Amino acid sequence: MTTPQEVQIVYCTVPDADTGRRIAATLLEYRLAACVNLIAGVESLYRWKGEVQRDSEVLLMIKARTADYQALERRILELHPYELPEIIAVPLSDGLPAYLDWVKDSEAQ
Image 1 (tube, one colour):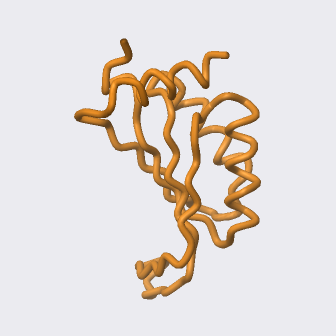
Image 2 (cartoon, rainbow, N blue to C red):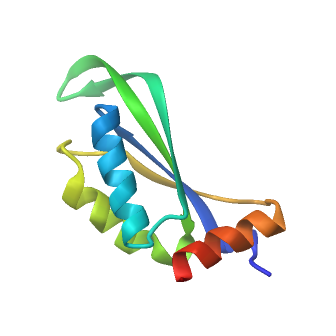
């Protein structure tokens, strides 16, 4: 049985759905993610180079094995158009055991 510590959610914002789909498809192709949700309509406000910025973005919610994080991060950096993309991994405290097994198994096949 897969433990929650073996699976994580990685958040990454992208400028548009096409970019998100391209990154998601690549992560799935290379078995670096089991599932990627694209959440449109995210409004981001942040400070960049001394100025407050406001952008409409798409949030990628990536379910992946913890062991694959470094490779996943490298692949996102290769594909992402931003100078400094948001790539944040969040560990799980719990989850449906069958779903966690599915995440682990879908990347391993």
